[in-house]
Length: 428
Image (cartoon, rainbow, N blue to C red):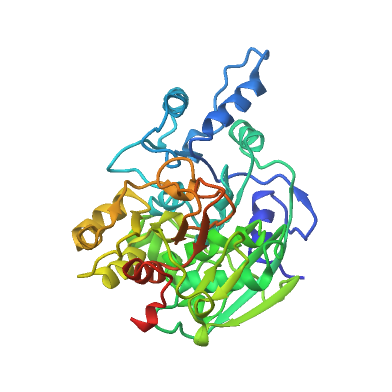
């Protein structure tokens, strides 16, 4: 029996000729990523060596990435002190893939990793963040772990006790209609599968629509795979993967794409035709509470958010800016824009998109997780409604348990900012 992409990656990383669903392996880690929660990992890591007399040094500093993004700049003395602690650890261990609070190399971890070529096809990537699934867009097996598991990875260079997951094959065909795109596809899929429909499984994306999709779109769908319960989402490496890594990430060394065997075994196959897909909205308070936009038109919105690791890339900002250009954000509605990285921010500035947003009345923020996290910038007031391009809408997600968060694509967010109510961008 042949193997899926993830089975091939795990077999290689565990030095085994093959693996099957349910096997428990300890694969070598190619990249280990943390953000501010590296402070928790450091605590766990130091406990591993406590009382041993061994100086704690990470297994391979070149394979560890730490990116400040959740609370930047620091919003409290506690966060600032944790940042300081992490900086000291980074310096002591010679970790070079470190992105501090800076305006030139900063950004959200799930944008920084692909943007700097830190992720490659066939990699095993672990991250102390649930949306580490994003990096499956580049053909890696990428998944979230806890602080203790990450401390083990830092010390040993392996992921401990990984059960080989089953894989759901998602085949997507058709051409997206105008004003419909990858965010609508993944919201639709989550609605079909439900929030538990892919628990402990991998979503492996195929079909002509995926082959024609940009890496930016692939990141969006893999990013939100976890909202269906998936361990990871993955797009098998192909020509677009190589193009992105060469032309945009500046990778010059060998790129080895991993593809599934023709006789690979899947636990389920889901087929989707996007040709007639409408803009999709995830309604409060669950990401799988998905409805076509026609069912929620006219709902008043107090806050619009465009950005995040899901939809803060240049093509997202370009699409939103095109709708807002020459128009104004509605009175009584505020709009926040969070580019996913400093590089994207600079590109958007060069292209005039930042000016379009500001002239329309939007507040453009530094690159970071902002209101998506709900503890830093852009919290909701009591009983306020937000429409956001982020990836979660759980109660309290945007900082206030009485608020409501609807999830959408950048073009829906932009069109709705102008009217102050949920608006179909196709009717503009």
